[in-house]
Length: 115
Image (cartoon, rainbow, N blue to C red; front, side):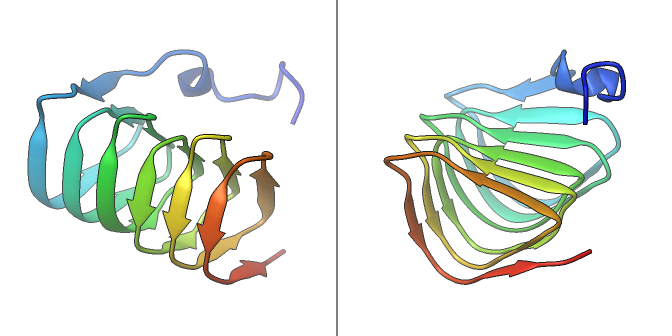
C-alpha cells in the first residue's frame, strides 16, 4: 500500500489508553487505538490497533491493521496487515494477509497467511 492509498488513521492515533490504564472487557471501535497500559478481553475493529512497547495485552483480536511492540498473549484472528516490531513478544497465532516481523521479536505460535 503506497502513501496515497494508506488510510488516514495510520498517520494519527485517535484514542490512546495510557500507561496507567487497566482495561478488562470487550472493545469495538472503527478508527484507531494505541494501548500503552494493560488490557484483557477481546478487540474488534476495521481500523488500526497499536500495542506499544510498555503494553501488556491478553486478547483475541480482529483488526484491519495491528502493530505490536509490546507483549501480546492471544490470537490475531483476522487482519489485513500485522506488524511485529523488534521489542514485541507475541504468544499466540496470527491469521493475516500481510505479515512483517522485525529482528529481535519473540514469536511463539503459528501463522496462517490468507488471501
